[in-house]
Length: 138
Image 1 (cartoon, helix red, strand yellow):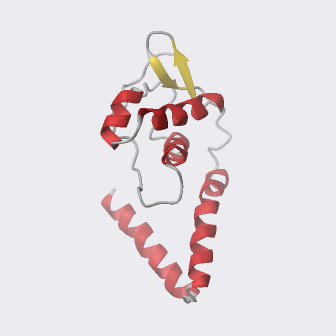
Image 2 (cartoon, rainbow, N blue to C red):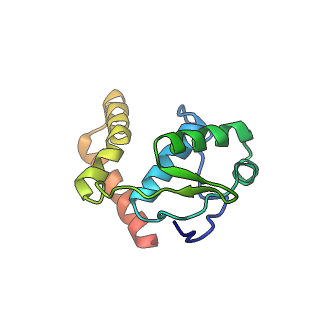
């Protein structure tokens, strides 16, 4: 596998106030970026030290995320090159399959909306506005 490009250490966006552990945020973000096509097989991952410094987190946190991604075959270790994005079957190319990846997040938002007794129409409008805002800025 040829190295396509070196990824920058700031490829992860961490929500420090989140109840989800930082390593899990990193794992999920990288999976989504790979499945969304922003990161492709052969891209070289930044070193554990670079990512830890960029995020201001313990290197063991980054190492744990990388290890999980490697054990699930999202990353591969290349002697002398560090970690690279692994070749994967593209069964997630279908939109329906990729949509399943956001189901847990949407379920959490739905539960919070119900607990706050917010009208579904208002929540859907806000979500639609957010989606359009992100699309407009791309």
